[in-house]
Image (cartoon, rainbow, N blue to C red):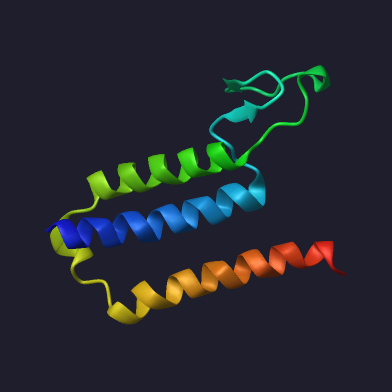
Length: 103
């Protein structure tokens, strides 16, 4: 049962992280100049925020919620090809998104 839950968590967290990264859905923001976390954007005087921690938080929360809702029996029916293919697709999507810096 634990293996199926970890697979569901990994897949959902990967999707949530990619979407959070692409659409800038950060659960919270860290401002290094202030050494503080905030749930809302701060004025420019606070310095630039680090969004990565918020993206990880968003992905972890989404993965935990979906893992709690999906029954392990349903998760055990996921085809192994899908489990390996989805991360490759997500990496490809991130690379396509980052291509904007080089074109």
